[in-house]
Amino acid sequence: MQVLIDLLLGFGIGVSLGLLGGGGSILTVPALVYIVGQSPQAAVTASLMIVGANSMMGAFMHRTQGTLNWKIALVFGGSGMLAAYLAAGWSKFLPPTTLMLLFATLMFVVGLFMILRPQPSRDDNEGRGWLVTILSGLGVGTMTGFLGVGGGFLIVPALVMLVGLPIRQAVGTSLVVISMNSVAGFLGHLGGPAIDMQVVLIFVAAGFVGALAGARLAKHTRPELLRKGFAVFVIVLAVFLFVDNAHKVGWI
Image 1 (cartoon, one colour):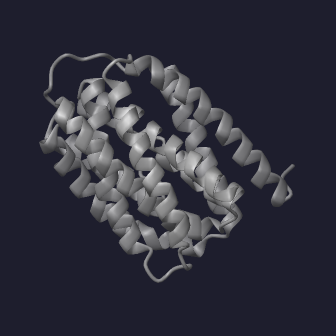
Image 2: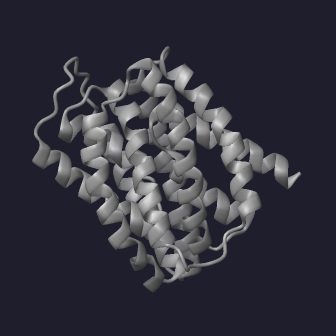
């Protein structure tokens, strides 16, 4: 039964990545902690492996559809990899509950931002300059290494609102950046808690199928509407995580 649950969770994570260019870690970390039963630190490391692998598959599909900007991805992702590697060790100095509270707070803020600041629809493929791209990549990479998030729910808004990519291209480009940041973050977490490779492989295998399905759906769906709905989901999950962990530390 647990294997079936893991397969369904992995498939859902893959669909989220292929369709929205993000959301993998938002689903993976809580799923590994609350459903699979891993510690937050172990879940962070496993999440980076799962999300990184599934993002690679999604990026391949988006490349065939022409919704991927390699130049932006490499610059944004390259600066993010450095920040992710340097920030990876920071989570070791925080209690598990504090780590989850920070994760929930970040999710809530980004969810509100996505709703209150609708992403503009752009037809051009030009960014707003390499300095903005580099600084944006450094910021997202720091969050990736510290909180174990591939960063898609931060990368796509950053690519659209800061870098200036059209929304569909931002989704595909995000997957390349997520893969790069996840690799760097995982390397920074080596030597941490043991990883349950059986769970990782189940999530990755199901996620590959989900990523393929999600990328195909993205061709026939209005991404801006999907992201508004996804923002609501992010906020609901953030509230659940925050309340649960605030109760553990006696805040409520």
